[in-house]
Length: 218
Image (cartoon, rainbow, N blue to C red; front, side):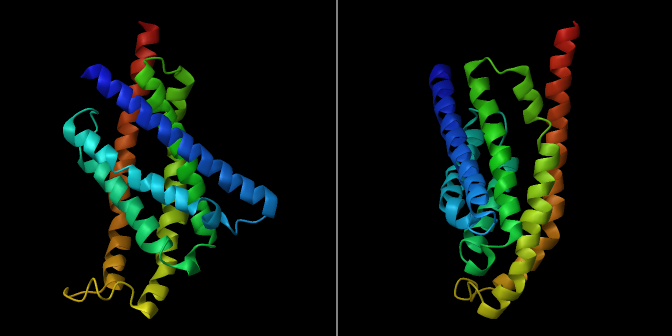
């Protein structure tokens, strides 16, 4: 079972690495060819939506215990990103050319190429030290970049459009609040929930990098 799980995780993480690498290439190619951030969603949006949906498997991985991540933190990250990209950006054409969407997709793609590459190498039992360092260092810049001027700023800009269109009115008709009001609450809570994940990553960084340092000095 252990070998099967390892082989499966290697295949999954390799698949995500290739997918996010392709996404990053598409974003950068569009930027170079057009000398503009316009077209970022058109070039990579569908692929990113697919990869993000597929990442729900990581919640299942934690639930059944083949990875030690647990369920809550992967579910928080998956839920936040999936809501952002599917319920907001994919739904509203007016947002898709915004600089904040470019920032989000670029930060996501760079971060996920690093993260999934690290996981894939770890499955092989031969992860280079520089890859581990990159995995637990690059997030310090990429995570806040993707969340602040990326996700949060995009959602804030979406509010007047959502209010004007009364988006998801049918889905929220039986509730005492609208999707517009729901998103305002999300915007208030988002930084606090994200900060919990951010602090968790720093704890992991200390555990992984100092552990490796201790082994070298032992």
